[in-house]
Length: 544
Image: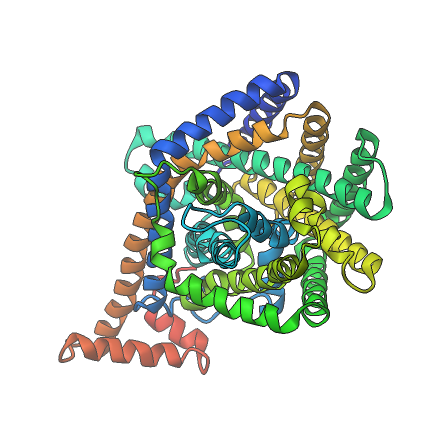
């Protein structure tokens, strides 16, 4: 993309976001009502479409991992992963759902225990407790990462193997290039992705600021006021600007590693000081129920009973992750260079969801078991104020204040890494997909996101903007379908190029297609021994 095109995407995106924020701040009630009504209509009429789409993404990713394309690398075939496995997973969690998991890991199972997902079971019973863990695992499990994974995989393939810009429009360029009128849509696709990303990130950060204020109020008795929200937002802004200045390898990587370490410390502390046996049994039962009912939960709707739980929880979650997929997917792509498609799929689609299930099983399992053993007030606390529920549970454990401080630190660092990764990716999106966008754009988006958060916190327009961001999920779902179509086409061409190189080396056709596949596998196994020579032989066009 030419420099003028990059600046156009940057300028138009910023102007659209400023306009939306101004409307949300000036008319928070009306803006929120309109956005929520539109979201409700989409959820009602297209909920089935979201369920089918996300389930289809899961099936497609696993099929791709186990196919003959699974050994293709996201980069030159002789490349190696840029980051260690621990750092890679840490950064995935930081960008994906870290802060939400800390807050809702205990509160969501307790909410489902009080208000079961469906009318099959009575509330506050052993059956509703089992349902609570099962559906919490489902909502935070494999499906939630499917949209992130598929967008990240496609962008990484085209960016690092094909040498194209890391943009949605670049992936679809092979389709739009043949249609002059469609070619004009490329900047619009990038602007659309930027606006959805900034709106989603801004509202999530803003809501988390409110939650940190609630935690500080519960632990230290500070006032829940505009002043404290301003202080929290200001402290976070300074930290993520310092991290942004440090760059991806120093800033986000180090903070993400620290956060994952704190996560493990907190998880194991609660596991061994809480009802340990009950927690372990809860995790085991929850995973069994999750796997046994995987397909049923994936496609469960209520056309006969009229229940709204799926719309309010699962379908909203799926719409939210699809809306966020340009941001999280682009970030996941950026840190996944050098991994094979199979490594990528299992790393992104299994490891973060598994950690999420462990977190929910430990915190949610502990809370439900404590509540069922003797009404300790956690259910009432969750129902009254979900933001302080976790800290109420800590009051039942040794070293309450230390646990609360660690949890607040965890949330704060997750916020910083989320904001830092968001400014990096949005800057990349508005700089033609550059791997290293200029510092001034990262700083500009960091300032703009902080200003949006603060404005909407004071005006009370966060929820409306959040709903508006989720509305972008419907059109982006169709864009993802287009990206999948292009990926399949390119993977076939990539494989064909490798097989053609083998034909030429033989000088004649070997007996049977299996002979080609066998030799191609042998060539792939020889990469590590002579990567440069082999790469020139089976990838003669030098695709990067």
